[in-house]
Length: 117
Image (spheres, rainbow, N blue to C red):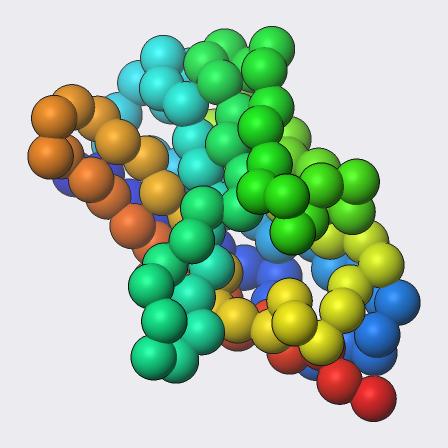
């Protein structure tokens, strides 16, 4: 049974940092790219970061490039998102995601990140 469990969200001031973590289980973690998405109410979910399997290539949405870094640990089966220099527009629910095959998408429950002074 595939499970993705996010943690690490919270409230932070503009310019601050947070690190999100996603614990994965139920599939061969090191064989699949992993993604972080975010969603604000009334808008579509947007992918902000992706890391290849086993981990040599990272891609980012332009809105977070240079501020966010995605990491994976293929022993602990975790994928983290380090978020620095946070801005109010980064406020969203953040989701961990893996695509295991055509139309076989798994999501975590999401973790809220709020950036406000």
